[in-house]
Amino acid sequence: MTLAGTWKKLYPLTEVHPKLNEDRTILLESPVIDCAPNLPQRAATPDKKLTFLRDSGFYAELRRRVDDYFVSSGHNERDCWPMYLKTAILFSCLAAAYGLLVFVAQAWWQALPLAALLGLSAAAIGFNVQHDGGHNAYSNRPWINRLMARSLDVLGGSSYIWHWKHAVLHHTYANITGHDTDIELGLLGRLSPHQPRLPFHRWQHIYLWPLYGMMAMKWHFFDDFRQLAEGRLGEHAFPRPTRSDLLVFVAGKMVFFTLLFGIPLMFHSIGVVLAVYAVTAIVLGMVLSIVFQLAHSVEEAEFPLPRADTGTIENTWAIHQVETTVDFARSSRAAAWFLGGLNFQIEHHLFPRVCHVHYPAISQVVEATCREYGVRYAEHGTFSAGLGSHFRWLRRMGQPNPRVEGRVEDCAVDPVG
Ligand SMILES: [Zn+2]
Image (cartoon, rainbow, N blue to C red; front, side, top):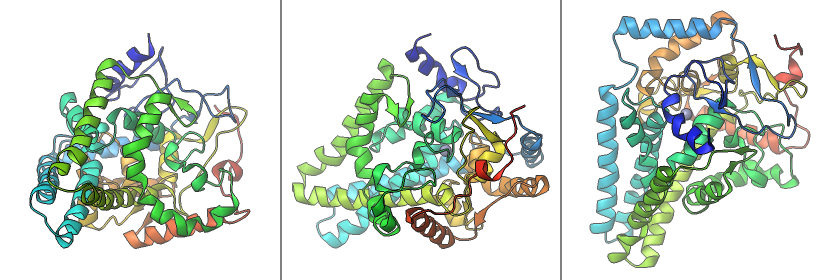
């Protein structure tokens, strides 16, 4: 089968794929996680496929308890009416902010809050609608998931690149240096103790914050095009897009740039349009970056490495997901609503195909099961506590010779069974 054919079959397979073979390698114990293709491995283990230990019973029991929750509560895992309502509210906010900015606003004090609202609306659609759709967690109908996932294409991103970068690489290899591209900031920053430290990283806990605000602009104008041209995400190659994938990519960019420049320039000067875009993109970049950093780049998250001789992570897949991820502000209903359950990242990593509206409820089950099985469940009580932890982690990673407490260094090294 060709690479394009592999991709073509991937979306259906990500829905339910208890067994995969031939074209892809089963790297995971979970029956619900997205499949991982035969991807090249990092330089440290060039001829080893990265694998996890077999589930020792923790995940099977957790899955059973979560299934029990859905049976006893009568809730559906997907196609939940609060999601459809939230989608309508968020797109209405986005359309209202955009319409008022382009057709009504005449003064900076009107444009500024509207640009911020536009950035927040775009972020919320990404967190809630596109993210659930991209994980096939929005609906049981594949076309609805595809539609929601492709909202990213008209908001300046690429659902094709996102699938490989986030749903496959990040969710398979969370916090594994050289594999998870979400913890790679290039030369600008050091988020993992296994990344090289440069002298100026000493100040990264100060200078990275404004750079987070530049992230959305980088995605809009640079990253998607470069990654599509290169066919690579870090160390990993990904399949070339099919003709229809390319069509969605090109059409999405055309719609986005028409909304961004084409229509506004009919009513406003180029300076005004660029200034409004800058405010919107900075708000969007800051919010997206910080929310993702609080889940994985904090003091409590682990950064394990695979064994050099076997390429094995010395942990089961499910426990790896829990220990590399940290929840925050679980008691805040506002955070849960706006962030699309991304403050419940442990639950999201364990059950990416469950609609996020259920995460607050199943987090009780996950936490209790973790405690019972001796799996460390980490959370920050508030958003600001998570923010403080990220700040300290950046400062620590920027210092010379920080103490490394990765799983490989701490645990006994036994051959994989
Ligand atoms: Zn995700």
